[in-house]
Each structure stands twice: as C-alpha cells, then as structure tokens.
Image 1 (spheres, helix red, strand yellow):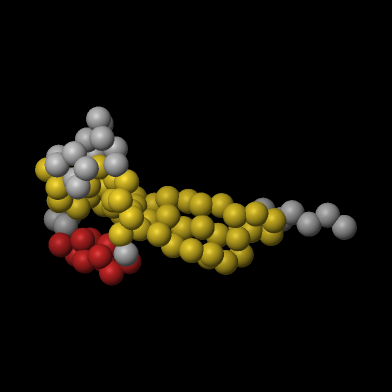
Image 2 (tube, one colour):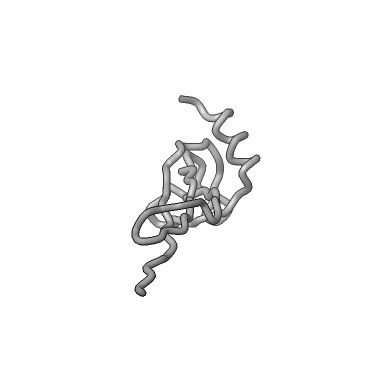
Amino acid sequence: MLLIFGLRTRSERLGLAPMVCRVCNHSGGMLLVREITRFSLFFVPLFRVRTKHALHCTNPLCGARTEIGAGEARRLLAASPR
C-alpha cells in the first residue's frame, strides 16, 4: 500500500501596516503576511498544522522578515488605513 502525505505552506497577503523597519529604519509600509501550513494526504489538504504571521520590509535593499504574534497582527490590521 502506498501512502502519500506531506506539508504545504501557503502565504496570504493581509495588507500594509505603517511602521518603521527594525533592521534598516525604513519608514513606510510593512507587508503583513499570514503563513498557513496544512497537512495533506493524497494531495488533499486535511487540517492546519500551524499559522504564523510575519512582517516583510518593502525596502528592496532590505527585505527583512520579522515574525509577530496573532494578536499583534490583528491590532496592526485594525489600525492600518484601507
């Protein structure tokens, strides 16, 4: 019997948060991203294994990635202009 399983991570862009990058001190929008990892069996995603939130610097020379918690991500989304 052959059993095919694995993990797949997908990224969702949630929006821009007005912040200053902690690495390069670039003031502007930081891209807020949610990364969801799912367990799949026979190429069918079954359930979530983990969810992470991260901020990506929009400065092309920096591109730093900073992980944040879910509460902070919700707060940043609520405070960001639409």
